[in-house]
Every structure is written in structure tokens, then in C-alpha cells.
Image (tube, rainbow, N blue to C red; front, side, top):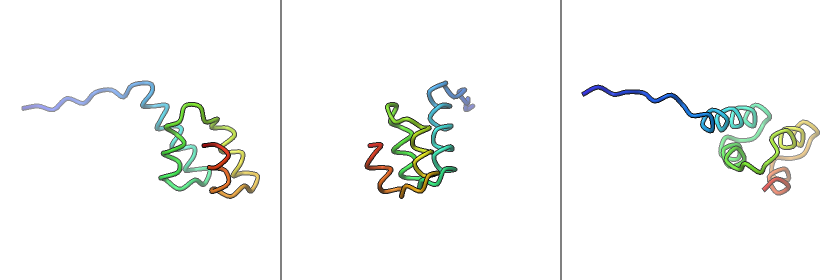
Length: 64
């Protein structure tokens, strides 16, 4: 029995990219995952909040 790998879909690639950007910005992995799955969360705002010194907990309350 052979196993075939499927190409990732565009939505999967976007989700992974968002997750990577949020982790790089400083969000813990579990928080970054929650944010990346929410299509209505502005990624640039999420990153900017941490860049300007907003604590993660406060940023999550603002974004979610």
C-alpha cells in the first residue's frame, strides 16, 4: 500500500503563514494558533500591538 501526499491548499498555506508571523511577533504558540484561525483578526494589527509594547494578554482581549 502506498501513501500519497496531497499538496497543501491555499487556505492551509495562509493559515501556516499567519501562524508563523504571529509566533515570530511574540505570541505563544497556543495564542498564535487561536489568532491565525480567526479570519477576521487583522494580522498586521496583531503584530503591531506587540511591537508597540502591548502585553500579549491585552492584545488577545483586543483582537478576540
